[in-house]
Image 1 (cartoon, rainbow, N blue to C red):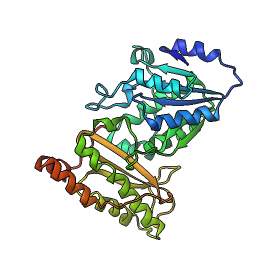
Image 2 (image 1 turned 180 degrees about the vertical axis):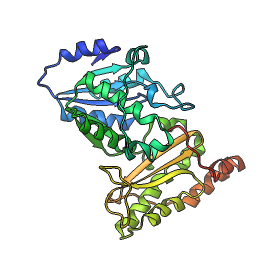
Image 3 (image 1 turned 60 degrees about the horizontal axis):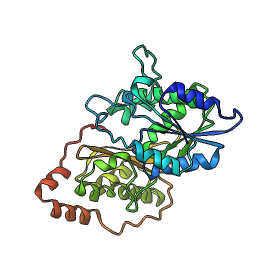
Length: 317
């Protein structure tokens, strides 16, 4: 596995690769988990060359967000990528990516970047599109792999690629979950014991709404209400129904799409979504109230107040 630490080193290594070889690329911010591993495995299987980047991009963090404390686990990340057969890795740095005279920003307009996450993190997507456009220029990938967990980001990247005629196929990959259903995320390590015990209920709530849709429920407010009811006491930022391609909000009667939720637990924002037509093989045998009661009993009154606040305000992802 070849490792570059500057753009110049990467260009040199990229030029040594056969121009006719297909390249599958996985951009990451590091702190890799099995979800990233699945993206890399797919890139490895579907291309001649597998490449990845590790760069905690400051431009996609807003004031007061967790840029300084975002987990950085370079040695473990490189070991995982090596084990998965990755051929080429860039370890990025802010100094190299954004020198003092850097003056360019790639920014979309419209509902894709002004609603949902965009409404709460107004500079986030401009930071994402700028760095991804830069990475595409450096790696020149045939295909790039992104997870559906960050659904809005995936839609934004696809729109940018289409609008700018970038010669890369964007491959969306389904969410990889823990055994209890929690969507894998680098930020899950921020959760304390009580928060981690409750977090899988987010996925259960989404699955319950998907079951209702598959049973014939087509009223958006009813479907959103199912999620809110199952997550009563959670600090919810939003529950939305969105088209998987355009990210347009789904109107009644709600057709195929995805239902997404963002909930804050402590200082951590948890994003999750499921397709309304998802295969429903998830067991929901443990009622939400049982899990909440168990955690409250273990954590005491302080934890109860922590999870049952009515206030919901934007927080870093």
